[in-house]
Image 1 (tube, rainbow, N blue to C red):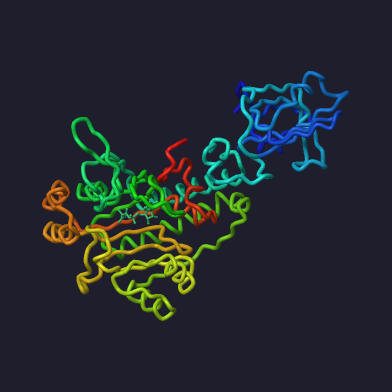
Image 2: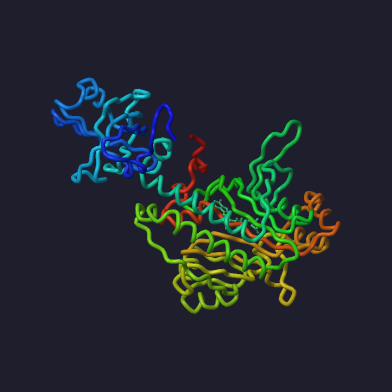
Length: 432
Ligand code: AMO
């Protein structure tokens, strides 16, 4: 698309005939001024091109205009010239250079990555950090993850819904809620779309999916937790945990396919390699006895520790679905197993040692639900509107949620989840 600023993206220049005049727009990545020659590397979101001005051949005004600090935002018109010595096999001989917005401040760190910068500094200036090729690669991969999830949803008949983020009561139970003022009342930011996706299925939608921000006032500051994160959720009507697990495997496979197909170059930029792993299933009871046989102290009724999750990967492979967790340690809405109510029809997907997804068949009987709430010290009165929905023709149903930043973290080999949230929210960070 040609407009006032550009005729081509850098990645399109390779197919432009020598001698043609083109216009590119982006940032000054590097410059080298050796007196009679000025080299300028211009970077746009698609790549980097060398712009070369020479005394004698280039207009002196253009040579002067090329003398720009790094990260200046420019538009450059020039002619394509083949040059086998240059990285792309061609360079641009400039005829016009415009600095679109002269820098008023020096850059907080090197976008080229020549001098490493602390994560905190990068996050303070995320709009500059996003120009680094590694950060660009992470968000390209995240975009492919979202495509993979949507492809899966479209292929399997899921309808997209938009649940609210402002809610009256806890959606997951527990105390990890952000309270907000809502006119004369108190309200909360939703911890998950859980209740609403169930209500959609009770409403007859049968298969729904959503990609939504969720908010958790967890006080701990870890490399795996954010206070605002993004969930990719589904819910299915007339379905049990086995149906939902089968869908989780399909979604996971579709996500890996999309990343491998769309983001091969990004994976290379990050130096990450991965094969499409087969997802293995194991029951919680089997998993804990295998962990115990390998030295873990875990007992029935306990959640896996970080070390247990790492050991599970060593024992079973990169991608494992652990199912039938003890009912007591799962969310109140998880359906107890009819043959063994001590465990529930619940499951987690653990990928490369980290829980990236969680789900369950839901309790659809009001009396069971009231009992489950009471057992956890929650007041059924606060969930009345939710329980009432189960009194008016609620079918058996099941679903799950995949954490977008968590899966991105594992696919990009990032060591801190903050790398995988564009503007992360944690205990300390509320800006930018
Ligand atoms: P759960 O609470 O396990 O389940 O969350 C689902 C997935 O969301 C991700 N996740 C997080 N990622 C970053 N920071 C956090 N603080 C955080 N909390 C959760 C994880 C996790 O596996 N309603 C249920 C799902 C369902 O049963 O459908 C739920 O929210 O990847």
